[in-house]
Amino acid sequence: MGTYGDQARRALLDSAEELFATFGVDAVSNRRIAEHAGNSNHSAVNYHFGSRDELVRATLLRYSEDARARRRELVGMLGPEPGLRDLLSCLVLPFTDQLASLAVPSWRARFLQQMRTVPSMVATVAANTITNPDIDDLTQRVRAHVSELPDTVYTGRSWLLGRLVVDACADYEERVEREHVDPNWTGFANFLIDACAGMLEAPVTSAGDFLSARGASAWA
Image (cartoon, rainbow, N blue to C red; front, side, top):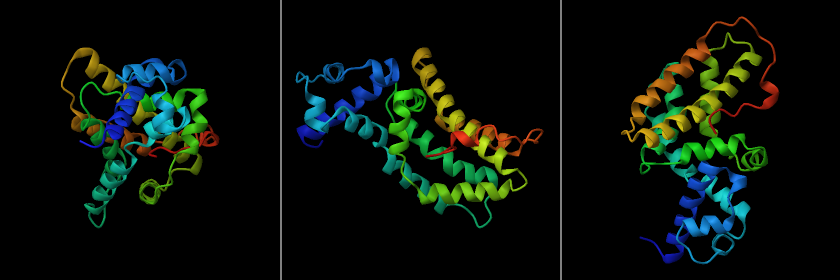
């Protein structure tokens, strides 16, 4: 069960994730987060996290170790010559498996969507993106499967894939809540992996440098 402090922190993280996902990061006060968590101490965020920035950081990174462990497990299951879809599975499944493990409704994907699209949060996400050797290795192996792509095209498509995965999961997460249906994250993950493979293997009719300047961290 953990200590009272652990439980209070977890409740604040759950509250922040839900409220940020629903109303936007900039629209939610620390006091509202505390009240939604059932905490009568309106200074609970500062007490348990030190500052609002640290709460946001903790919410952003709260499942990162679980995702890293799941990715290592999937990589360890790869055969000697994995195909493109096998490698993409190692990149997509840690996120969708995480979503599948959460109670319904969940707000994780919608929270991450907010973090990646709200201007005030872009710097926070960038500052807290953890270098992951497993992701770096996988993306290099994916690149080898589509070595015929010009660098500008690969970089741009990678950036698009990062948006596709997060935005699509956020939309599906919202649909599950709105329509009160049982989620099928396994089926949805396969749908995403198919889409990612199709985009990477699509013909090239324009090799301009359209998106590489934006940065392309598709899987962090």
